[in-house]
Image (tube, rainbow, N blue to C red; front, side, top):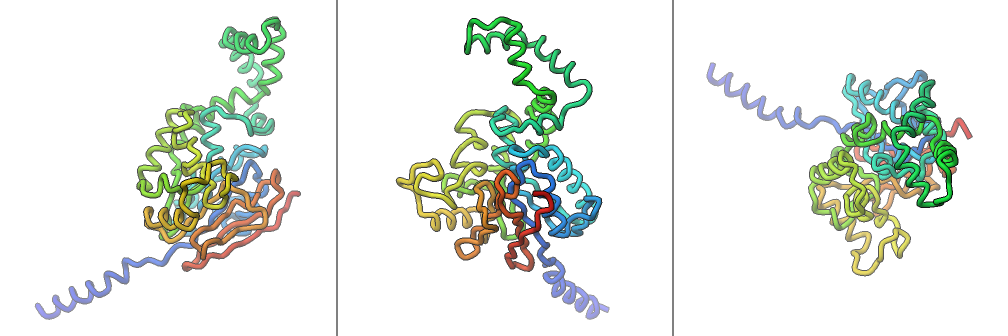
Length: 338
């Protein structure tokens, strides 16, 4: 009896390491979508993630979207809502949807609307939008008048109201409310990671610079989420820092093209190696900087660039990356809407 028990324990100890080593998941990584819902659907179908009704069919696949869903295109809200839908559907069958925080999501939350399109505002409009806009003017009339008087002190209140109405298309009040730190979408962005790691692959929107190479991933995400929740518009805040994970381009651009002086900076190879070692990863997958000729596998596969100008704004390829069994497989889907 004792001998049989000893043999059973030994067999369990031998089998345990094998049972603990689950096969690596299939990973699909997609870069900047910038409001082009049809392009996103083309990619999701090409990657076998969704069915004709746009529901999850990816099984245990891990989908990573590296941020910048919004701005430049009209269908940002549709993309966000679809990714939120897929998140719930994937979880029910053992899959995962990881959406990263991009610099354009952060810009929306802090009120930087330079790249918001009329269609993005229109997506929020309904039958009550005019009444809401009128109420917003009435509630903020003094501040609005003062603002326009700084530009032209001769403007009458009536002229200012006309100008403000033209600058505030229907849906803008609702859009700005939703994207504010306290709004539905603002609160959602504050839950997103700036950096994620799946297996030995690190995913980040812009890139990890030397400034953040040794900052633990959990701390980077804590700072980014806190800055979004606070609507922090300071230049030094991690969500606005040009050397930060949402904005950094230095792993693919140098010589001033990234807007940061080159003097005193490490080489790209050294910076990349330091970042990967600091974050305990084998490779880094980034978006943010368009590469219109398709997915780029760079630096012997340690850096993969997946912003392929997917949105029609850029006229790039519908590129996406598959990681399967440790292999990096670049893809390009056909565009159904030109």
